[in-house]
Image (cartoon, rainbow, N blue to C red; front, side):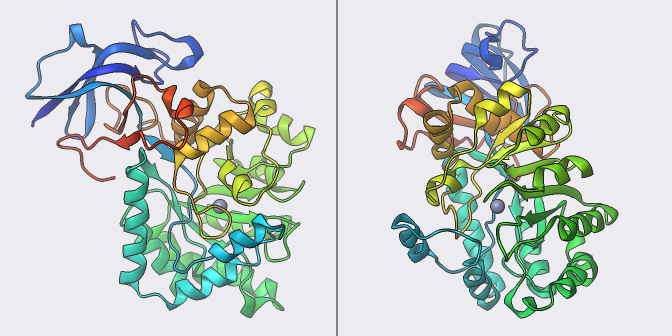
Length: 398
Ligand SMILES: [Zn+2]
């Protein structure tokens, strides 16, 4: 089994609160002039270069910074078609209400398996090229038993973090019979999707007539839980609502968007911080010209937060976590350290994973290298493509 040592790491941000000899200010677990040994896709050793063990081969990263690979815990990569005209309309004043999803549903249903697979492959590669090493992928543009199951089957070829989102919107053919669609989601569609999914999600949003009410969402999530799936919720995106309350009540791993929160919502999230992560998706607010969530208020209250892309054809067709990080610091008053931890440790926590998001011996060797001497350049040099996922020798999978 070949081991590889990465040297020449000017700054290593591990996120490991227990790492000996590291600078633990802002919880970054930072080392300068560091080395990392990788073996069989896992991290074997982390520490100062001067104390590094011998390895079979050496790769010098040339004075760059290395950080944990980004964990993008919320994306909708399985879709066909294009909605750039909607984006342009929004930039000149149109409002988003979830209705355009039908456009993507039609295009996705019309695409072949090979076309969808090629589209997902291209998007996953685009993410890796920007430093993302784990991506959660939702279905939700099929909205039929056949198309939801094949969306998840294709997603599972690229990630173990797959999420059944049959409850994305009520498809047009069920507009006058919503309860029949909820029956379909929780019956035949769920059975067809469970073999390819780890999670179930629901767009719980009373401010959109296309999305699901609190009662409908509870039925969907309960059925998913009974089928063995973990729970995630799209909530509180377009206005105040029941999403956060429901997510906490049901012990969901994540409630995503959290743009409009009451004081009670924040209290509940803080009390549930070990169980339920609030995932913020500021690329959506950027792409819909909407107010950003108040991340400062959440952190100050003790809420666990994550940052993710929500890469999707309607409200944010950006796959870039560095872009999300720049928004979080510039528009949401997070420090660079808080933002970086939210897109690594925090998003890993929202997937209930402790083998990713932190650079520590035993974890997966998911490393991202920056063409810069410090992680601060991710923010300082916004828009410049300095982050990319490292492909360590002997590392398998995505
Ligand atoms: Zn989403």
